[in-house]
Length: 206
Image: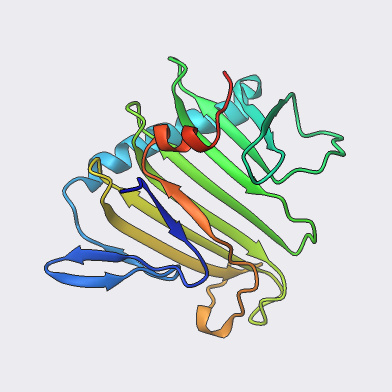
């Protein structure tokens, strides 16, 4: 069985919980109250601190890439300044002190400028995904001039989804009802449960 799950506009998967099946959509929110969550959050917060430190104090350690086509052709670049190349997506990558990848941020290219997407994957030292975050900002949502979505997925070390959050706000961070909005920019995305699976698709050079 593949180690990743594909999500799309009609995204769904089945999750077993107390012998009940739950349908997971982009707007789903739940917490299984797993005993693993505290450890996952501690690891996640530690990774966030390392990533923030790179962005704030040591930007030279941030690795930048262009994905040039759908097939996954990657090109490492020194920075994103003054680039005129057409690309399929860009990536920010952070490694820990041992060279292990702990964070990958994917930014699909938006030719129209009507939307911005980011997919963030956080991996522990063993290369297991512990948190995946999807962020989307877009115009033409009807419910507000600009709409911001954020979904967070938390996984235990068995690759089981134990918590999911979802929030949707306007440009002033006021909560919105997703039922009032139109989603023209929800595209398929993949969640890789391990770094190994991620690197089978995209081979980032060191």
